[in-house]
Image (cartoon, rainbow, N blue to C red; front, top):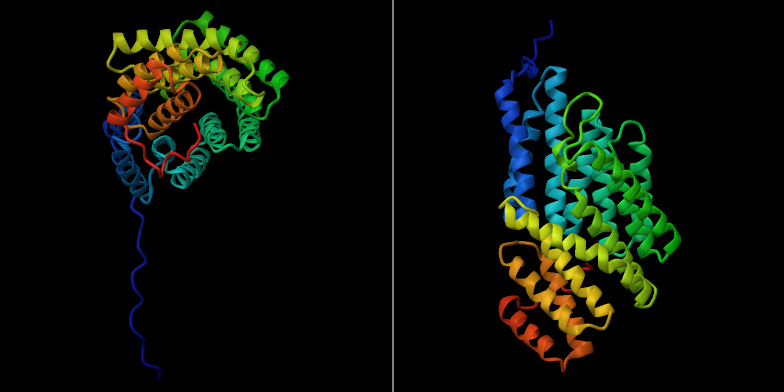
Amino acid sequence: PAQPGPPSPPVPVRREQRLSEPELELLEHTTVMFRQWDAQCGGGLRRKAVVGQLHEVTDLLQEAHPEPIRRRLFTVTAELAELAGWMSYDVGIQPTAQKYFVLALHASKEAGDKHFGAFVLSKMARQMIHLHRPEDALELVHLAQYGSRDGATARTQSMLHAVEARAYANMGQPKQCHRAAKMAEAVFAEVRELGEVEEIAAGEREPDWIGFFSEAELSAETAHAYRDLAYVAGRSHTYASLAQPAMEKAVKLFAAECESSEQGHHRSYALNLVGMATVHLLQKEPERCAARTVEALEVSRRLRSERVNNRIRRTAANAGREYGDVAEVVELTDKLRKALPEDPDTMVLAG
């Protein structure tokens, strides 16, 4: 008779793990905290911590969990992956950012959260605009709008229209840009009516991830859309004039927010100061351009954001090329040389 062979190795059993409610809440709270740090300090300072937390949560997903816990873990995974992607984008690591965004999309699908999936698509669209691929950005934002057409809050809808306006601007389509910007404003009026913290149908507060889209952010997106359109249209004074009041409003609102709270969106404040500087440059006002760029440089000292640094460098360089004999521009160039030396490896990135 045949001799029995060696025993088969035991089949690993996925044991059901019981994460406690406090443990789950801690994971969710940590994600919110990371998001706040990103807004305050930029992507460079905490990116590795976010990636480490993401790995911990994906390890937890290898275990068996009851379906409600599994979905919440996938939600945390999606939010951490989106944040890791956004932070990678902010520091200029574009291929890595795209990989994290794709992971965030997959995790949001597993979590059954189509609205967060739309949010991830909007971030991918912003990256495409950054990489001078506005057609791809428009396709992504339209996909986001379609996917979130049922039940998306007014704040989310307004944000998507604002990104749509930015994509149209970079494609050189002023009518579509203007229409999308007006839609963003009209839909945001519903948010104002409900108050600064909107309540959704289930009686719960809006998710933390969309809270960034405030009155200041809406003004900023509108302003940058018209500013971008001005560049595409050959430095159009008309579109620069449309951008100016919205950019001034954004700067004022972000300044008030950052002065009143350490948790303010300091990176957005810096980006819009630079945006205001570029509008002044389009309007042939080099002194005001230099003053705003210096302000942005001061705010950037508390940030780790290559995106902010690049925009400051590029704006100062453009001012220097056009108005190199203006005293304020010369002073700006000197300050920049000391505070923010050029990095040739990152100067090629778009703003």
